[in-house]
Amino acid sequence: MAYAHSNTAHHGSILARFTRVFAEVKDAARRMALYNQTRRELAGLSDRDLADLGIHRSMIADVAHRAAYQK
View 1: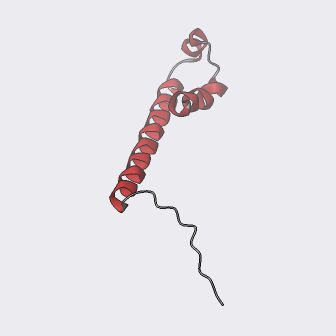
View 2 (view 1 turned 90 degrees about the horizontal axis):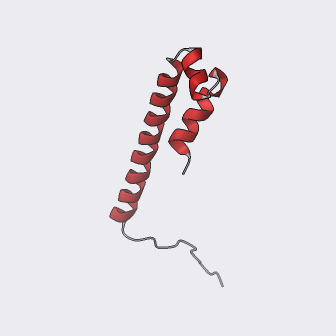
């Protein structure tokens, strides 16, 4: 005798799932835009201005990542 079993969990309506996925994509795009803007603005500063902020040029990507993705 054969048995069929499904482990699919029901997580609400298709509309609710679509809305959640859309919100996650929108949030990811917003964070990426913030990362790019922060990185671009910091890269445009002089070494002296960066030093005044306590940032070395090699730290720009990390600072931008923390600004956009740190929770």
